[in-house]
Length: 207
Image 1: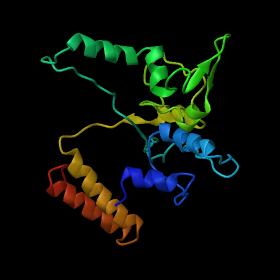
Image 2 (image 1 turned 180 degrees about the horizontal axis):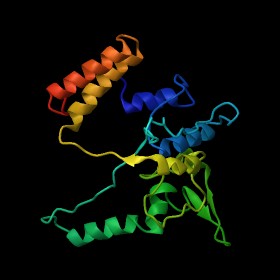
Image 3 (image 1 turned 45 degrees about the horizontal axis):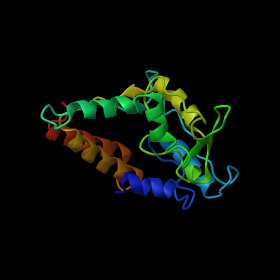
Image 4 (image 1 turned 45 degrees about the vertical axis):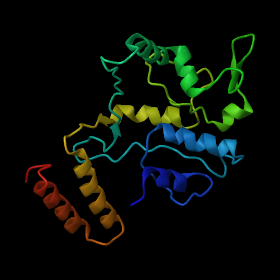
């Protein structure tokens, strides 16, 4: 089974071996930015987002990631310093470091306050830890990568995934049978039945 990195490589402008992939909204922009940095035009390659499939009850099969939670161990040697670092990355300046990068290396600021990416900055696709910082007040001064703004509009249709104790078993079982169904190795209904039976057997869900 392909790992996330393998799927991203196949989706990239350099290979274009798959047409549809499931990934974070930020990767819509990262694929597009990487292509632009490599000299590939939007006429030849552009990734766009999809809102997910609507279920019979009107909801969408689309999820948004859980909140990022950070903790500092009580016995850390410098608790105050660690907290200050976390607080810094939640500021506008910290968000610019995580996305744009280093001033006068990845981007410049003109006398009128306008920002511009350098050629090096463009090659980094505005990803220095967080291409889309999650601070609610953060504003990217050069705008998000191509396609991300549209992808974020679909958050209204998405729900937060609930973490379960044996999540790794769940993903392994569902992934295994989903791939078999997609490859045509097993009939869809038979594959779903086998998936359900295995989930029940592992105590992940009730019959």
